[in-house]
Length: 341
Image (tube, rainbow, N blue to C red; front, side, top):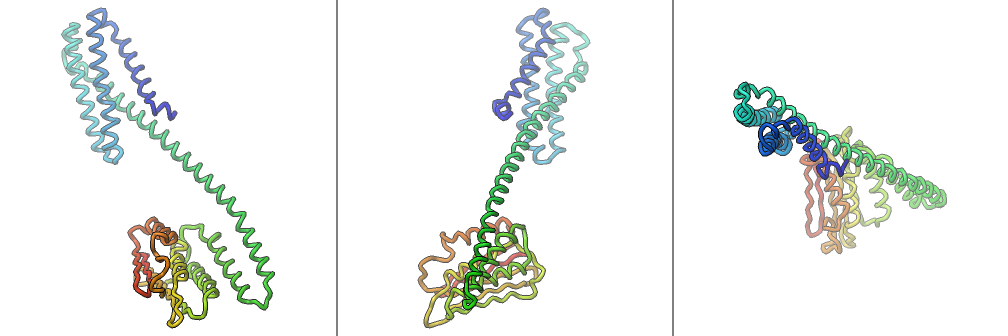
């Protein structure tokens, strides 16, 4: 069917059938007049019909029907049909009324009903051609989407094998760590919670803000265990944000970057300050961290894949309903994300 439509075989077969049938019905013109008059009748009738059909397919449907301006579509289609009827009537009056001598067909009204019915029939037929093509292409698109979804689902099911192995391994590691090393055991627990949240609780469009806060707290605890004591970390989610739902893992890339690029001063404090609160109809997330004056890698430069991903997610999920401000000073980076609730 794809080749059938691609090479316009539907149009070719249609015109072969239409012209052949009309030629058969008008073959008597050859005997009564001449072959030239016969060809003229075929040309006039089918050229005018082609004007109705392709005017409908190429102009009226794309400009009016597809844009849901149905009133204007039917009005212009009526004008096109009327144009066909007038021109064909004039030709019929000349050919059949005067050349062939049929006195009854010398009136424009005599041929009007037949020509109107022909024009309307072919206008409807051209619409049927267009609808059949659209149905075919839409079916192909739906089938392609189904195949992609199936492939994605199969890939997802395959990926679910590894997490079970990872969790079993983490349990084994946790059990192998001696109880006299509580920090190592706590590290395994925190990592296990982070992994479980990412794998099993983020496969939805939105999650509760409480789950996001728990995830960030676990991440902060995990990172805090890796850092020295010369780092002050403050995470203060406000109580007025309870009950809010957001897209999962929107804030974590900013917190991850803060821990990754936080300063390592020996003679002055190093800090990370994370805030999450509500201001009227806005959910506001702020993350600020101290930094070295000349970091080896810019935090939010071209190489920041995580930040680029979250920016793209914000564009897709919140479009015109968010504001992201990222600023940098000599010794500080800050991020402020506002989401309209």
